[in-house]
Length: 156
Image (cartoon, rainbow, N blue to C red):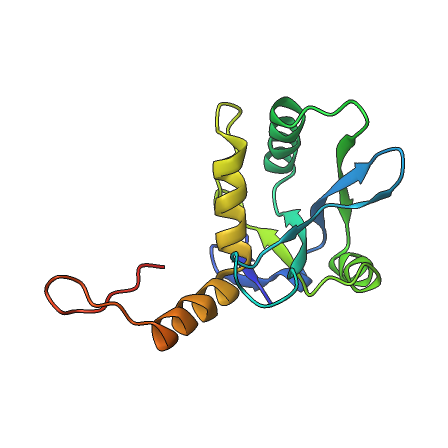
């Protein structure tokens, strides 16, 4: 499971938090929790969806602001709601998700002036770190390309 910063600065598995802040999505056709494909392009045959959650309410609210401001679609409504971790897992399983990503407080900058696409990339890299590592290892294993000095480098 993902680990988030605890109240005393230690690590706490997200399942032990009293609640997480999820992004609820509603449009004309569907109502549910926001999920994101956490795998890099070219990773496997199918998307790797995670339910997206935040540890901090205010950061979740700022993220929904970015969604509304930069992906304006009058048919979609985003809101933040609190859920118990077990409830989020249950929703994820019902929606066919492979995991849950809980963004720790301060991990991703969701300031109002940020570019939404940059924020989405950061969220994907954080939430899908294991998929990104596997993807880079596979690229290196199947097609290593040394630099000019003859050293092969991977920058995750």
